[in-house]
Structure formats: C-alpha cells, structure tokens
Image 1 (tube, rainbow, N blue to C red):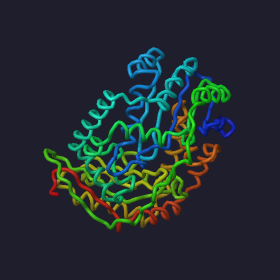
Image 2 (tube, rainbow, N blue to C red):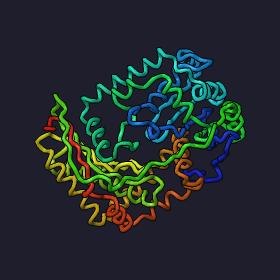
Image 3 (cartoon, rainbow, N blue to C red):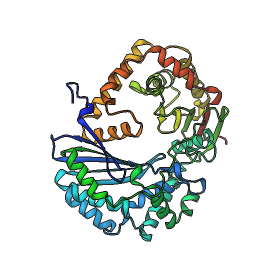
Image 4 (tube, rainbow, N blue to C red):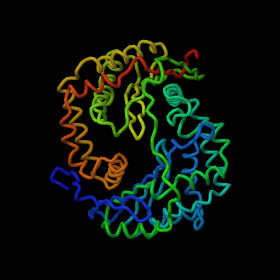
Length: 425
C-alpha cells in the first residue's frame, strides 16, 4: 500500500485453482481476522419468465441444509466461532460473504464448501423460504417505491430480457418453482470456473490458495461455461408514461429513466460523475437542490446508474405529493436536459472528483471493503493496477467528457416514466 492508502498491484495476488476458481488475496496482518467475498455467475439473468425468482430462491436455500450439516448445525458452528456467512443472488450473479478469525478459516471453508457444493434442499426448509419470499412479495405490492421500480423495469426492458423481470420473481412464478428446479439450477450454474473469491486479512497468499484448494478440490465443472452476456436494448422502447394505482396511499413514487451503459464501457466513469452531479452529491445533487429544496416538489429525489455486465438503467426516483406529480416530472426532465445540453461547472466536477477519490480510500480501510473491490476488479477485467490508476482516471475527467456522455445516454425520446400511488391507472 502506498502513502495515500491505495493498494498497489504488487500487494494483490491473483491465482487460478486447478478447477478454475479465480482467487484474489490481499494480506493484512493488522487484525487476526479474514474477510472473504465471492461471486458465482449464477444470477437471475439465467431465470426464465415463467420461473422468475429461481436464482434468488436457490441461493436462499443453500444454507438450509447440506449433506453433512443441518441448518441448525451450521448456525451453531458459526455462532460458536463468532463467524458470519451468507449467500444471496442478484440479477447477474450469486454472491457469498464470510468473516471469521484466521484460526477458524478452515472450519468456515468446510461449511462454505458444503453450502455451495452439497446442499440438500430439505423440503421443509424449501417451503419455509418460499413462504418468506411470498410474504415479502405480498408486502411489496403495497410499497409504492417497489411497485414503481417493478413496473419501470417491465416497461423499459422487453419481455425475456433479464432486467424485465424482478430478481425475486412474482407470487405466481415463485409458487410454481419446484425443489427439482432448485437442484437443477444449482447443478447447472454453480460451477468453479464461474466463481471468483477474494480473501483479505490475516493470511498469506500461499495459505489462502492451500486452504481454498483443499476445501473445493472435489468441485469440478462439466461441459463448457455458460455465456455471460446481457443484450443491450437501448432505444428499444419509445417514451411513455404508466400510472399504477396503489390503494390507501397518500404519497406517489416516481421512477423514470432509460437503459444506460455497462460497467465495462469506456463511458462509465464520466457517466457516473455526471450522475453524481445530477442526483447524488450533497443533498442529492441538482435534483435535490432544485426539485426538492427550491421548488418543494418532492419529499426525496435521487438518481442512479446501475451499470454491470449488462447495461442497466439510468434512473431518477422521487417521492411526491400526488398534487405535484406532473410538475415534479417536468422539473426532473428540465434537469436531465440541462445536464445533456449544458456543461457542468468546474466546481461541480471538482466536488464529484473529491468525493469519489475520498470514498474509495474509506472503502479500502476495511478488509470487507477491499474484498468487495477486488471482486469488481476481476469481474469487469479492470486490472490489478486499477486502484493505482483510479485517482488519475477520476482526476482526468473533464467538463467536456461529461457533456459528451450525457448527450449520448440521456435520451428523453426513450424516457419511461412510472408513477405508483393514489393515481388513476
């Protein structure tokens, strides 16, 4: 690590185990613990419309019992060590995290390998997880933020596209998922050659490689790896607005935007900084200052770029009084046009650059933050020297580069607007 707290390429060890697992190790002997984060290319992008929620359901049941351990035994062992372990799934990958004292890592890896390689999907536990998911989905129908986001994705992305369907699925699709579906999904998509593991803490690269190889040696891939690509559907929909009535609500929630860009795009960094100026910095950027503070048209308003393997949406979210819906939408569109048509100020750019470089340094202060960062570097092929280059990348952005990408991606001709709450359908 250099004097600025940035981790250098020489501080990171990257290796590939014989079965194809990619391992990234960063040694930190300042505390006697180890943080581990991993991902498997087994997200809901591999679901089908009629089995939406399968990836998430599968990940949620992996810890519920294995060939050697019951769910209760897993929890007892973890509690006895003061360790943590969790598994979940998003749209592009399944993820897992673990933390323990370095002396307990062998035991933790023993459990983790069982969870990933030998889950038994006990029928009683499967039904418990199904019940939890269904309860969450029923409750979500009364959440105007969730409803607006759900309908936005269904409208902005075509049927069959991974971003068209929610990660958690629907009541109908989750109810239709069988135990054999869970077994099949895990067997098909949980592969060592689709797995990345980052280990950070009181451990050497040699120790990490030895322990992981021993824990996962019997895990073998069968056949070629599955394609890991999400179709770019920019410009596939026309501008439209949808109102969704949610009874018993006094607030309306707005989600509006358009398909954006992938994390691997050369446009990512200038687009990300432009978005921060739009709706993130301080009290939520220009949107917070103008739409909320000056005009009083929103309870909250913020923007986000969801950039991953696929081109996720560039969206604005807002909560408003129903009487202010149209004016709030018009005001948000004004800010989008201003970002697209006019250069940001030098002060705005500098503030965003300071925030991004400072927040990276803070994230790298914890083992877990470093592990998560290393995962992203590997997944998006950013290079082991990415952290050394990061400040120069951010500081090298210009007002002109932000304007160029804003003009490229802010597309009001394909702007999808969804309003959920006390509104007419």
